[in-house]
Image 1 (cartoon, rainbow, N blue to C red):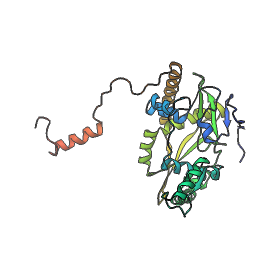
Image 2: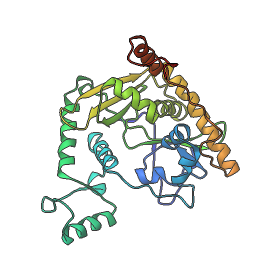
Image 3: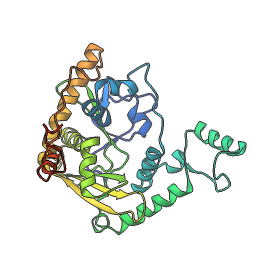
Image 4: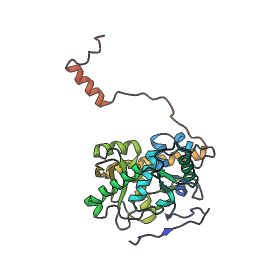
Length: 308
């Protein structure tokens, strides 16, 4: 497979100075890899979905940042992506816990674990590896995957300057298309049903990730994103797979939210202030709850308001 655009590399300690598609490891991508302030897709989503303060707490730009702890779920997701998408360096990043150490109660087991961590490796359990193999087999059976839906450039980062603020934007899609504009993101989930993925999109900002990828593809590669597709696979048997395309109008709204998050980041960088939740909020009863309680009132399951 030949890429339709050049792939750039960086020397150690060299920083990105020109827009392009770069071959960077995940640690460098999330770190200080540009010659000016930069923000990734996940950073923009944190600003928009939580607050600038939540972003700043763990940002590489913050000299007093809090180092994020790895969770088992995050370890599993990263390992699954690395194996399923054929990314290089799995053995350099991950190691499987030997059967002789079923837990870390013994001194020898703890020493082995600490040695692996000091070497920069993430330890996976044999059960996790078996689940990843099950996921891989299930994906391989899906007709659209067999037709090449997950084929493209992996472990690639789109990096370019926002034309409005000059801020560096960093995007790392799971699969970078080389011949068409179909952008695919692979997700492992407890529930891969379309209704569950709708909730996940809202809660985790996958729509914003797709929108920013489309913006970067156009700016750097001159490729129009024609579709944003989530390939979702469950993490436990039967490893059910669903393929969900996010509607173009939804992506349109997401682009506006990306724009707002970029502008917020730029203002915070200029002012040095990273606010959390501002002002006073008033919460209204959700429409679905109001309808349900009204229906319960109508059939006598809920007392009238003046029945106290």
